[in-house]
Amino acid sequence: MKVKVFDNSALLYDYLCEKVISKIKENPNITLGLPTGSTPIPLYERLIQAYIDHKVDFANVTSINLDEYVGLGPTHNQSYRYFMDNTLFDHININKANTFVPNGMAKDLKQECENYHNLLVLKKVDLQILGIGTNAHIAFNEPGSSFESITRVVPLSKSTRNDNRRFFKKLEDVPKKAISMGISDILLAKKIIIVAVGSHKAEAIKNMIQGPITEEVPASALQMHSDVLVLLDQEAAKLL
Ligand code: F6R
Image (cartoon, rainbow, N blue to C red; front, side, top):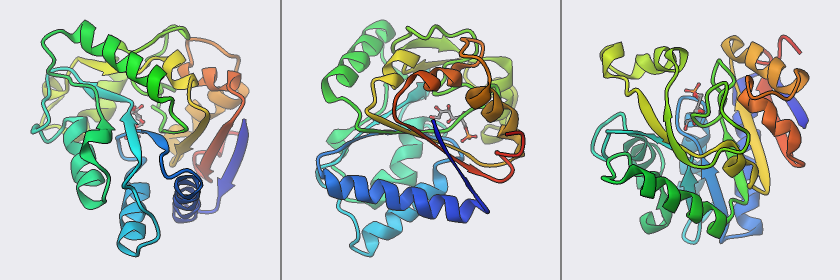
């Protein structure tokens, strides 16, 4: 893993945005793997500005999101489809038909997961952007998830539901399950950039980089990938 630590998060996101833009320029038909959550928001803001400034063209870009809550549809303001549309897709010239987020309302969730996994195998993510949970989850692969896992329905841990509670009125409103790309799905990506900002991520980052490769630390699976870049601010890097 290559690790880069920035003096502040603004510098980190400027760097990340430039990296994503240069990858799109290199390959306008790129497939991006995208996360939701707080971490990518400053990246998406910068990408929108770059689009407005004619610095990047998303016309032929495909995107594949990591996960979606089970039971929340595209019009629910906490669904990840809603988040992606509002935070990025509706503000750039990406073809919506080429943006993929699992359907958390699918009648047959098992089939939905199988189709999503097949999509990943077919499209092959060129650049995967990841955030990390305070318990070192990636996507919604909670501690104990198999490194062999593919897209499936997963229960959300207490700590993740607590972390995400801030987006909902009350804890009971936070869904208990999600559809998530598996660890082995994520490792299919050709290049991975994982981003962490803030001291609450420091322990997860230390375990991911310096700890043993163990299913108890889902992000430690990234040590097995040959092209991973870790972008951190000073706080997230403070235990390294
Ligand atoms: C989101 C996702 C999650 C988040 C993680 C960090 O699609 O898959 O793994 O990346 O929970 O969330 P934030 O960025 O809100 O701290």
